[in-house]
Structure formats: structure tokens, C-alpha cells
Length: 341
Ligand SMILES: [Zn+2]
Ligand SMILES: [Zn+2]
Image 1 (cartoon, rainbow, N blue to C red):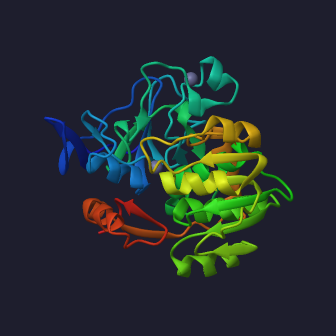
Image 2 (spheres, protein in one colour):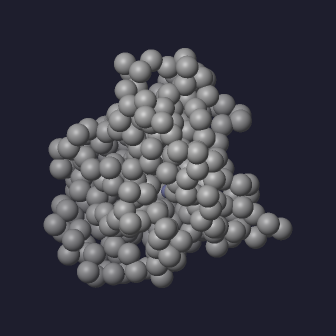
Image 3 (cartoon, rainbow, N blue to C red):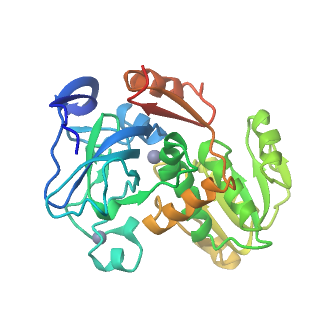
């Protein structure tokens, strides 16, 4: 394998007195442990979760490199791994939840719910993708099909995988009547996925420019404001997750309907038991997705079934672009690429 540089550029998150700091620094290029892979980062997608860590809404203390939507190529492997399996240059997408592959949940395929007590998520507690080289474990990587660009694959690891998992959690299939609330990056991908599974999708967003795109992606009906009368859909996927949208979700779910709050826009949501009991509503939560689902998502992107909207930028621009995200100045997803100048 090619010799590795000693140092690299990295966006390091640190909390000082509870206040998050986020700076571009020069840090050592790590060397992989016996059972680890060192990836040369090709692309790292930016997520609203990064913003929420940096603005203190959902603090995640510690010193680590942010960036949890990662694609890279094999740069070095540990002594216990075979180069036939992980040849230099092999392009891999990283499964952010970082399942150990060994516990009961991982073995059942639910590696987004790994029971390893010391495990942390890549870019969310341990080093992630806003750097040039990142160490990952073999259980947490999925090969990227040649048809998929690294930037699209990076976005797929979260902005496609999370809605895909939510669609599965909601049991969405042919003719399921689905209401999608919020057509940001995840919602728009969720719409494409639900339509792909044969669902009849209604979509709502306050931004009317997104409603036209939603129609192109298969929405049968769109609303800027939802109607007064309940729509009585089978499943509501709420990609906003505020108190207001959760109330809408409950209102428009049919009896026996499922409500899946995907967006985490509220610290608390309320349920009135006697109303939910009479309706027999099911509240289903959803977290990220599994490696098996990530492989399925990459396949759907390769086939053009899901077309994530992606912009790219150099690694240096991460902080600026995250702030732009904050102001709502970004459509789709922004991906940092260390190779860009
Ligand atoms: Zn994310
Ligand atoms: Zn595990």
C-alpha cells in the first residue's frame, strides 16, 4: 500500500465548559489497529444533526472529528485483515451507527441497534468524515457500486438510509396511503422510496417550490396547508417532528394508522391516551438504518430509483456551509470532498 502522510486536515469538535468549539486543525493521520480499516475520505455529507451539536440544541460532548455520512477508499488495513478482501482503493460507504457485528442485535441484522456498550457513532462521539483519513471497523462498511458517485453514496448513508428505514418501520408497501410531512432532503428521499414501494403518497411542505418537485417524484397529491378534514392515511412519516406536525400526524392518521416521527424537531411530544386508544394508533420510532438496508439503498441509487440532490464543497468550507444550512440556503445535501480545492 502507498505510504501514508503523517498529518492531515480535520474539523475537530471540542466542548469547553459545555460550549462547543469547531475548528479546522492539523492532526496526525491515524494508523489502523489489527482489525481496522483506514479510509482515505472521498466524501462526507453534512447533516442538520451537525448543526444541532454545534448550536447546542443537542450537545454531544467530547473531542472528535464531526461528519457522519462518509465514503472513502481503502488506504491501509490492520494486520488481521486480508488485502484480497480490502484491496487498496476499494470504495466503501460507512455505516454511521457503527454496529459491532457480534452482539445479538447485530447478528439479527439490527446493527443500528448494536448492544456494544462502548460503541459510538462515527462523527458523533468518535472521529468521522470531516478529515482526510478515518479509521473504521469492517462490520461498519458497505461497498459502493461503481455507478454511484462518492458524494451520492455519502448522502445515501444517512439522508437516504434514514427515510428508507422509516418506510420499512412503517410497513409501507403497495397501495399504502402515506402522508409525508416536510420535504427537505430526507422527506424528498422518503417520498421517492415510498413511491418505489408502490405507496400512494400525499406530501406537504410550507415551501410551495418543493411541492412541484414532489409531484415529479411521484406524489399523488400535495398540500401547502393540510385540509381541516382528516385525510385518514395508513402511515404518516413526519420528517419535521415538531409539536405542530405531530398533532397533524395524529389528526390525519386513520384508525389503526401508524405515525412515524422521523424528524426530531421537539424535545417532547404528547399523546392523549384515550384518543390514541380509540383510534388504535401506533407510534413507531425509527433510528438511522442497518448495513443491510444501506446496501439496498446504494443499489436503488445505482439504479436511479432514488436521486439524492447533492452539492459539493472543499473540506475547508464545512463550517461556512453548515451555517448556510442553518439559514435554509441549501436545497438537498452538501457534501465536503477533501480532494476539492
Ligand atoms: Zn445525520
Ligand atoms: Zn453489535
